[in-house]
Image (cartoon, rainbow, N blue to C red; front, side, top):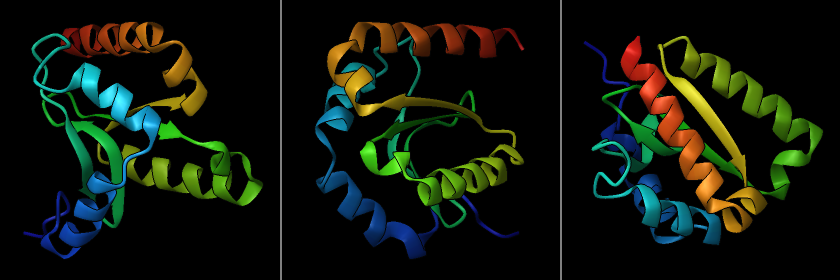
Length: 123
C-alpha cells in the first residue's frame, strides 16, 4: 500500500516549515495545539501526497491553510485550487484563512474552526 500521509521523503521539508512558521501560523498554533479546541489533536506542517498542509486534524480529516499575500497572485490561486481539489478527493475538508484574519481576529478564526469540527462530528 502506498503511503500518502507524512511520507518520509517529505520529512526535511516539513521540519524546515515547522522551524520557519509565519507569525499567523505561530498565533493559530498557540490556540489549537494540545487539544485546546474540542479535545481535537492538530498536527502542523503535515504532508498529504506531495503537498504540505499548514495544519491537519486526522480525526476529522480537516486541513487548515493560512494564506499570505503571495496567495493573491493568479498563478498561486490556480495552484491552490488544483492542490485543494486533489486533497479533497481524499475526503479531506478545508478551511482557509488570510494571515490578516488570523492576526487581527484570532477569536473569530478559533470559533469558525470549532464550529467546523462540531459539524464534522455530526457527519
